[in-house]
Image (cartoon, rainbow, N blue to C red; front, top):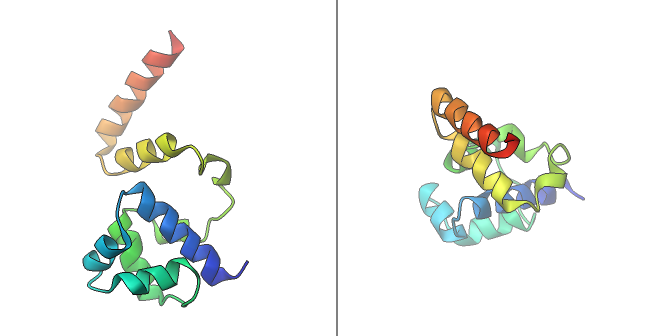
Length: 108
C-alpha cells in the first residue's frame, strides 16, 4: 500500500470518528471537499503543513496518520475510539475521573 493511500485511510478513519463529512473538514481547513476526497483515496499527496492542519482539526497528533499498525485491532471498535477521542479533549483531571468511574463500573 502506498504511503498516500495509508495516510488517506487514516484521515478518513479519524474524520468519520469525529462525525465530520469531507465538506465539513474541508470547511475547517478552508479547502474543498473534493480535495479531501482525493487525499482519502490516496490520489493526491498531502503537504506536511496541510497534514498538520488536518490533525489539529481532528484533535489528534500528526503522528497518528503514520502509526498504521499500533492500534489496528481497535479500529473496528468504534466506541473505544469515540471514548478515547472524547477523553483526549478533556483536562487530565477529568480523564482521571472518567477512568476511576469506568474502573469502578467494571471491577465490581
